[in-house]
Image 1: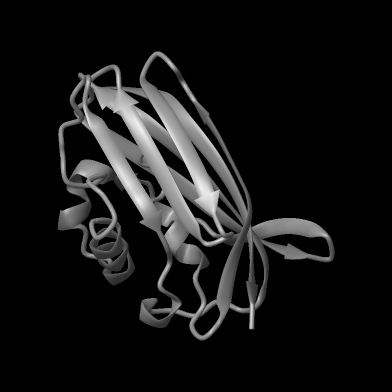
Image 2: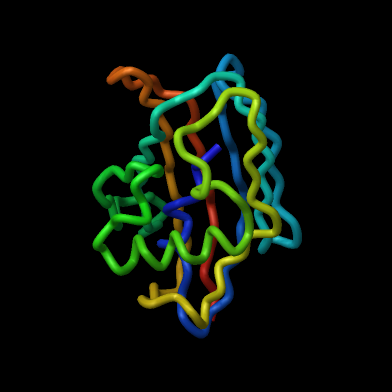
Length: 166
């Protein structure tokens, strides 16, 4: 449900970002999730949690397509969603500030069972993004894990394919 955090790594200043495909797999014992892309630009996710968690850890990687093959481009450190507001990295702070404009995903910690989390019509605002990326094709892989009682359990994964055009 909190798999969007690193989608901010895909924006480019003065360019247009087009989402070509978004696939998600979610452990249905933890959350019921519905997601969609509108007009190749806006992402929406609605999640109803079924189990509680102390925190959610996001691990992501961005890949750039070169000569028909996706190669590693950016792989930041894992992010503890419930502590994202304490993060010192300016890019992570920017991501947090943008996400809360579109939903409640980083506002409610710990994660409660039978709670509704959402992100509606989320759009990367290219002109506000602090670092440009070159035009091209990219993929973002995101994995989310619940932490409960010190144990970590993988609960969701996502692949987003997009291109940045001048």
